[in-house]
Length: 320
Length: 249
Ligand SMILES: Cc1cc2nc3c(=O)[nH]c(=O)nc-3n(C[C@@H](O)[C@H](O)[C@H](O)COP(=O)(O)OP(=O)(O)OC[C@H]3O[C@@H](n4cnc5c(N)ncnc54)[C@H](O)[C@@H]3O)c2cc1C
Ligand SMILES: Cc1cc2nc3c(=O)[nH]c(=O)nc-3n(C[C@H](O)[C@H](O)[C@H](O)COP(=O)(O)OP(=O)(O)OC[C@H]3O[C@@H](n4cnc5c(N)ncnc54)[C@H](O)[C@@H]3O)c2cc1C
Image (tube, rainbow over all chains, first blue to last red; front, side):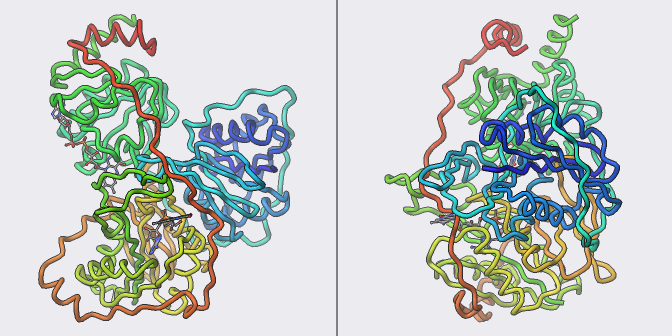
């Protein structure tokens, strides 16, 4: 199998979210994968050269300065065809969901989203992926080549560094890039905290956190004491308590940190879909019957306003 | 301006889902079905565009068995003007759904197609983008705000990095995220009125489309369950266990 990995970029920089896709390729096609990077004046391409890729292709063009799927998709399709790729792969993120399904449409290729396992059996690829809000795992058989895939980050982990560095090759953008879609702005940012999908510790808060200040004080404070990232439930985001990009769950992000602390989170199936593969789960909730306790390794039935400050202090003190 | 909205029949988001005895599909006995919540949001947006005088007609389309008429009736009751069922009983994969929707799009020639960003059963999040590629149209996925002006749409998108704003000329495909709006409850008058609204049934062959699923679902199973944890009495015990037993801090 020949794999083309599409690196995640914001048009200017390579994102470390690319790494699980590389780990996937190291397992499935160790000597037969190429990484494609797209943007304008791209920085950080060297960070992808020590994982054993045959090459890291870099396409720089002013029309590609921002990650618009309409503009990037023909570039991916072009290089997939030129290389004769059997699989076009990226880590599952909003970037890849937007882009790779468009690539599949351009190539009339079948696609598997968010896979957690892949084997071949009697000449067909067989993949597993969560379905029905990760309540169930589906097994899918795919025929045809190429197959487009997004891979669920936590299932594939980090790639191993390899000996010889991969060559970086400048590659031409295809002659015509459609420029109908226009990028205007981006608002957001993790405010100096680690990225939610990469963090070792995630502290998430639910709707009872009242307002953005309270959320930041209690949830942000505890996260900082652990050097972790902040997450939220949909109810907290809908109520304007936490920014959209912090939503964890079926329709938000999937995280699987070493430690996930759920504070005043009821534990709906949709929320669990995004965090139940965390290594250790802690739940703090006033309701002893809250469903979150059914999957928590450690449950504390208590009022957050009392115990979160205690916990934060305790962690801070024992750190220093 | 005409707006086309796709509507998928899916299990109710709050229904309990389990595998069937053979492990080939979910257990569908007595399962409550609903309009995919993201499609409901897309439909609500289309109806609001009509109420605001931007759109003149809202057309809902569903693909599947005759039972999808139920969800199309819901769409009509919410405020769609007419509905199309593309009736097919075989399982489809996302490219097949996109091909059928592309044919409906070509037939209807809408200025805008709105649809959910993902169906909550298979959670693929593919069809809108595939459709946009097949029709060679711009796309704006995961929309949390849509403003129409000067023949284009300015769309705020929910991305992993924050809210991104892009502008696409129409016609375009826009996929709805959860915070685009809150769908209305269907009023009784709407249900009554829906009965007299047109619901056309056609087949893929009528549209000149042939489909064959290349991705096939072969097995459905429950994921490994997490083992039951323990209750702790206070934060001191919690910190001690996280340190000494779990070793994560
Ligand atoms: C009994 C059964 C068996 C199945 N077997 C298979 C199988 O073997 N292989 C397989 O790949 N899939 C199978 N599916 C699911 C398949 O039909 C998916 O619906 C299809 O692959 C699209 O994926 P999605 O719904 O997750 O699309 P997404 O890309 O998540 O959907 C995005 C949007 O596309 C639109 N859309 C999607 N489907 C429809 C529809 N039918 N009508 C109208 N609008 C629609 C909706 O607006 C939706 O919000 C099966 C489903 C059922 C119920
Ligand atoms: C299609 C669809 C997609 C969805 N996608 C997502 C998703 O991606 N992510 C997501 O999170 N949700 C999602 N949801 C919403 C989900 O169903 C729940 O509504 C939501 O997760 C509930 O959020 P919550 O736990 O903050 O709020 P609530 O359900 O209100 O729970 C609050 C909890 O806090 C506890 N509590 C109250 N006060 C205190 C206190 N002082 N101290 C400690 N505990 C306290 C309560 O006992 C309760 O358990 C989706 C829903 C649908 C229909």
